[in-house]
Length: 181
Image (cartoon, rainbow, N blue to C red; front, side):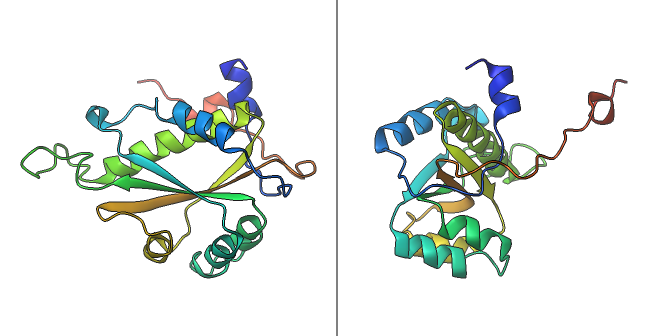
């Protein structure tokens, strides 16, 4: 798939079939996402794929800080990806000080880059995704036994699209988002 077609064709998918995404496909997606740039090539992003229906249900009902619009998406996806980062590395110097005034926000920057790569790679494989950030990262970390020294950064619902998209929000014109000085 050509890059421009992939960028323009990828949409947030919130309705999925029950068909599981094969592990070989997930591994191709993660391999592609692993090529994402990161702070000083630290490669701090990790992915935990939740396939256990009871755990997906629990996350969808109790791990979204009361943001009910995400419940239906989560409980009906065949795979829920928990994205996390290894903390204390990205944006830091060896002595533990921050390299820039951005502090540890580089962790989220790298997570965002990797999430976009993950979702584009999934789209190329015919897999739909939607990223969600209104989450109770502490509960989710506990439920998936996240290793110490990592923190949850996002959820990505993943599966094969069911039905047609109801509404596609138009993109802003380049003149609205680009400035020259």
